[in-house]
Image (cartoon, rainbow, N blue to C red; front, side):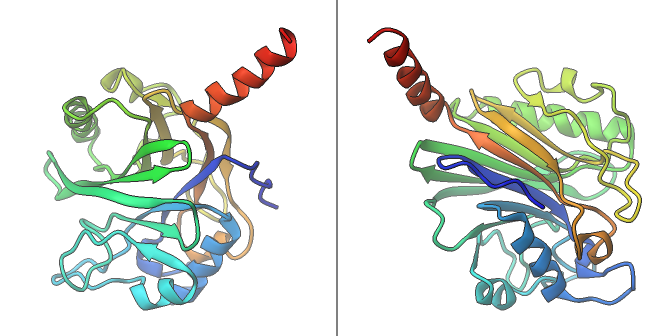
Length: 253
């Protein structure tokens, strides 16, 4: 069972959906939606959300998501759910307003990219970056540095990076390349039936904190894709300050 989300927190998840092809080799978008529903997330970052060959049509069709109560950040191109397979969706009715988004080219031998969406929440603005890094170690490190440089040019606000980092090591191999970000302890998410590799990760910056994080391995996640989704309950700085104020008031009436 997924933990119940505490009021005021923002639950974010990341899920490599492998073009909606499960371990039974069937492409079943509605099965992926079933996994999304189980996460009880406000925002989900997706990888491999589009088919591989041009014009890269959506593997997870927007009408299917809309029918299930999800909204989609329109990164284009037309017919695709995301950009370079990266997409960001959020739950209809969640206290979120999409105010800004961008495509982020990444260096390397393989065609890779990231996407950025900024939301207004009840506790202020939050920046969400979804990514899918390369298979080559040198490229991954260069992509992390490029992304860190990109973020350094933006206003310093609560920021989360989430996606398939393609990093097998449980050592802090990525941290030194993005010193302003704090990576949550990696947990095995791949392959889905018997997870061994912590490929899917979440990193926080700009004062953002997590009250909990984990891997969701419930049905049908163990056979809907080759990855399991990861999640984190995020605490924005404004909520931390509010709660600290309540504590201080209790200690010093």
